[in-house]
Image (cartoon, rainbow, N blue to C red; front, top):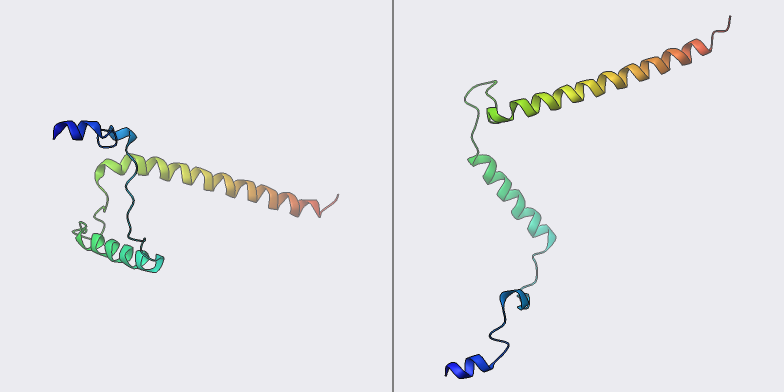
Length: 99
């Protein structure tokens, strides 16, 4: 009996040469996928840790340095954008005045 198994080359293929598994079940419709995703996200949100008091950080303290750097970078970009727009507005306003 073992001889019969070893004679069939398709049964002794390594896993890397095996054909991908195909399912006869079609994928779920997009609306069903969205509905199930909403249910999963709602369940995840309900099970997530809640803040104990107002101001309690929702994220672990390990994220604080990264969030601080991100906040500083966004603030610097906002200041630079305001400065550029202000300079341009003043230049346009002064362009109307000729001495």
